[in-house]
Image (cartoon, rainbow, N blue to C red):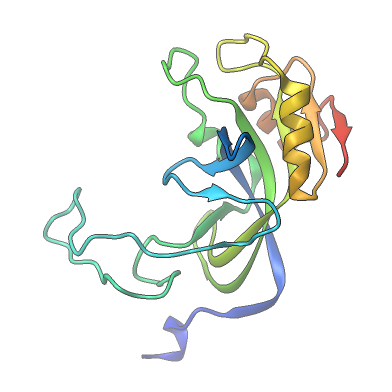
Length: 187
């Protein structure tokens, strides 16, 4: 293996941006990855694993490398984060979507082996660093029990901001351009 193919092991965490679903797990509000059903538990780093099958379903002629440690440079596995918050907009469903799930926008700390991509990183480990909770869902309806959700997400030990009157798309736009209107719940 050439030196260029080896992922660097960063000493200090890299901070990127990601979007989570807020779900109930263990009787409290918790963060869940959007693409795979991984729950991010408070006080525990998320350790990446590769769930790839040997064949890519969209490109069956392309073989994958199952059974490797994540992140593998030639795979898509790892804890994902975007370099710029504005890139998260592609992960917010349109307002017409039937999927009405509370979202959390956040900064995430990544460490261990890290693979850099064109818009961000994939890492071996991650943990939330700061969270922003939209007060409105995609249909501009007020999220019920948002204060309780914020208090429960404070279990992560990071600042949790409630963004008044904003949807996830609004929060992303305001974070990209400055600072959104918010109330902060500190652990």
